[in-house]
Image (cartoon, rainbow, N blue to C red; front, side, top):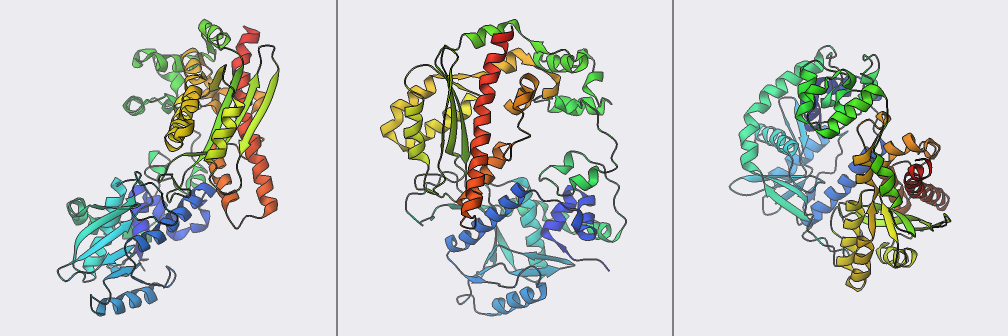
Amino acid sequence: MIPNLSKSRIQSGRQCQKRLWLELHQPKDSNWTFSAQARMDEGTDFGVLAQELLGGGFLVAADYRHVNEALAETADLLTRPIDEVPMIFEPAFSHEGVRVRVDAYQRHIDGDTLIEVKSTGGVKAEHIWDCAIQTWVARGSGRKVTRVMLGHADTSFFYTSEGDYQGLLKLADITAEVEAIIAKIPAIVHELQAVAIGEKPAISIGAHCTTPYGCPFIDYCSIGEPAPAEFPVNLLPRGGALIDRLIEAGYADLRDVPSTELKSEIHIRVAEVTRTGETFISPELNDLLEAIPYPRYYLDFETISFIVPRWLGTRSFQQVPFQYSCHIESKAGEIEHREFLDVSGNSPMLGFIEQLIRDVGTTGAIVVWNQGFEASRLGDLASMYPKYAKKLSVIINRMVDLLPMYRNHYYHREMRGSWSIKNVLPTVAPDLDYSNLEVSGGMAAQEAYKEILSSQTSAKEMKAIEKALLAYCERDTLAMVALTKQFITTA
């Protein structure tokens, strides 16, 4: 018996037929990360808000476990007059073994509009395929779909009035794009139906495991796979087409790639260090680090973003700073630490600005890693709070960026093609590794902060998360102290 397919299963099969087979036959082997689940939950919340922004309508209440009930509810609503039921949310349609739920379905006398809502800031290629599958099924079930719309968040929307999100949802007409590919759907469906009842496809791990979406079966599929190259060619930073060409030429390990195949200075350096194991340290690095004026304020931010803006004055997907760590070093070598973290649930921005201005004083270098990020966040805050714009501008102008110093003058092969501070630090100061921290990355920090903001989080849990966030951000600035001092003291 051929199992029923859904839109998401067809999309899984388009990405990787083995993934589809595993979803149907071995679902317990999937492993969804906490961050992936959190993104899905936030997308669900945006979908619920979208129903209100679309003007309301009739919701098909039966969930995905009760398909027949959902189909019956939908059929009943569609028999009622259009002026009585103009908009249906989550209607169910079925055609040739494919069942779909549509986010919103708007009825008109001369043809209906199918609306898919995505928690993104624009239309993506995979969204067109989503809508093409849904349109093919809806039409196959007897509906006259004449227009297809994709709803997404408008990233230019500013949240200015409490509870008022009118303007957040932006509708893009993608009818033409859907019509251009919809004829391909039947062949894809028939192929994937054969996959569903066949043997498990023998597909190895590759780029399809992460594009366009991460696969929850990657851990399962890794078992029994040949060991990857110790230093694969895709370590080349911004390698793009070059990496594809090297793989096609049969190169797996970067150490085997002849220098004649590489053109850019950075690629040649990465390959040479990887091949020889000898760390590259430019003679200029020490002079650059020594030249940073005192007092030195080592500064790092943590930020949070929401599809649906939480605080007045913010935009959809805006990166809002909620925390910083600052280690202050005097010329005599004395170190002082200051920090900020708002766990109240209220907007953290004004408190962030006022304490930051106090903590970094008026003179000395503000040392950061990747100045573009911190400077952009302060620029946003300056626009939102003109009263502090001049002082924030001065802070930006005092910034000294360690990232280009290290990118141009240092490379260790264990950095594996990345100058992220988390890749550089273990090669210089391994005792400051992040692995012993409960929160050990920027995405984890965002998810931890969302837990703090959740009404479901207990006071005890909040305290533990707060402690973990403070420890993580402090490690970032302590890392910069170490990366600034290491070569000055040993060169």
